[in-house]
Amino acid sequence: MSRRPGRDAPSRIFHRRVVALGGGHGLAASLQALRRVTDDLTAVVTVGDDGGSSGRLRRELGVLPPGDLRMALAALCGDDDWGHTWSEVLQHRFASRGELHGHALGNLLIVALWERFGGNPVAALDLVGELLGAQGRVLPMATVPLEICATVGGLDPADPLATAEVRGQVAVATTPGRVLGIRVEPEEAPACAEAVAAVLAADAVVLGPGSWFTSVIPHLLVPGLAEAILTTPAQRVLALNLAPQAGETSGFSPETHLEVLAAHAPALRIDTVLADAGTVSDREGLERAAASLDARLVLAPVAVPGGEPRHDVELLAAAYAGIFADGRM
Image 1 (tube, rainbow, N blue to C red):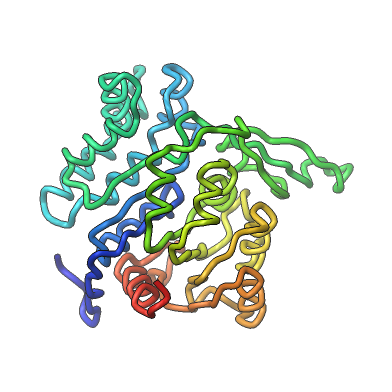
Image 2: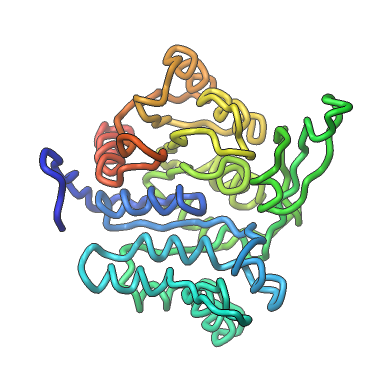
């Protein structure tokens, strides 16, 4: 695997059971980094997507939305030719004037295997992972699709204090209003048993980065999974986003991200909050917000310099390796 000059690969840490929770591009970046520092990695993935190919399959077939699960599997593919090829194949989207337009091949493969295994998503995902040579396991957070429901303010210019309910992941993620809080339906959604077991057996649990209200916080709203996150003896690491997300967290400071997380899960305690050093303007304020969760703050360069904010996989891997090696496991 080629590396940029001046970058040392983080030392692989064996025998560390790491569980990463999230969804979308944030989780994918975290998984690409984590597979460089552990040989025992499990992704627990949100199942609230209702847009695009995932939304169409969800509505037509009643299945879990496969898109975030597909992205996690692609992120766990290796850096050799085999891994690159299968990652690209999994992510391939059809372009046509017919019904296949916009569908990702990986979504269709995952759903086909679910049907082949009688609706068992875990067996299907395990088989896809085996086919890809994935460097880790991918599990859904719940066994039924979730609907994200948000309380949003600022939608009525005539009444800035009025609130309204916005339903659905896409609508919440793109709302022009201010998200005040979320819940999921069904409220007593059954957690994936394998995901719960992985969290309870983990040495480290990593939450974030990712869309805060639609990919990160929902893990704390599924009762069985939330209980596992709160009670696991694992080190709990929270990776902050590099920038607010337009719509969903517009105007949020890093401290605000921690405050809304605590509001949704008051009993949650974190060991380490990881933030990019270049994105924090109020270090003392962020340290206080982290301390309210019983966490220490670690600032490290984890972003690709310049351009659109996105994580540098190698730098993020080095940051995770440093956190895991500090003896707090």
